[in-house]
Length: 234
Image 1 (tube, rainbow, N blue to C red):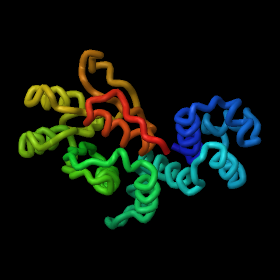
Image 2 (image 1 turned 90 degrees about the horizontal axis):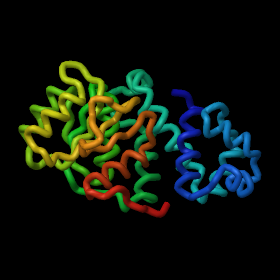
Image 3 (image 1 turned 30 degrees about the vertical axis):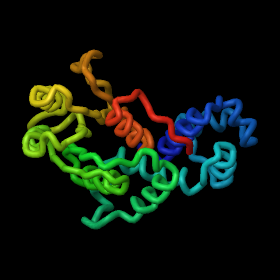
Image 4 (image 1 turned 90 degrees about the vertical axis):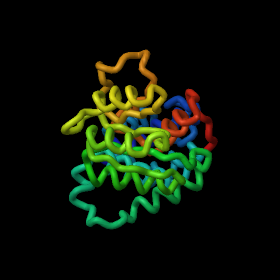
């Protein structure tokens, strides 16, 4: 993933949440529509001046746009986490948490979430992020580990955040085994593609990679609430 693509995801999400067409955003920001289209398509990195213009038009802060773009870039590029993490807490996570907690308090919770991903750095980052929202987190390194942790902590696991492609036991097999243990278990998948093995009748949510932390926290909260979505004014 590139920084241009990360900025594109943020601007597109904000525009859609505000109910803006590209034409309306162009008028409100005084920026060319093609320029906005290129930004959303990940073809062009916005300048600082254009970020200020877009932030003003979308009623968002410049820092929130930059923090979210950085978060998206790192969460969807695990090799960057491996090269930059030294085992301690990552400073930019703190900035992202501060931005998110001020704007999206309605997505906080106290439930327990089992995070399943074979990338240690990604697990740790998601753990820090969700813990900052009040959730209790249990970590599993692959599908087999997830089954063992689920059995150990069931019925106190309220939701499983599950990657699809993993060693030993993949996410789809893990999902089916978890459902055999508890047919009411709530699951949110993380994947770069839609798993064809899962049927429409299966009760699950899929966060399509690359994803924004805002999209993730919304999917988690709405799944926990058993609702199609929760509106949170930002």
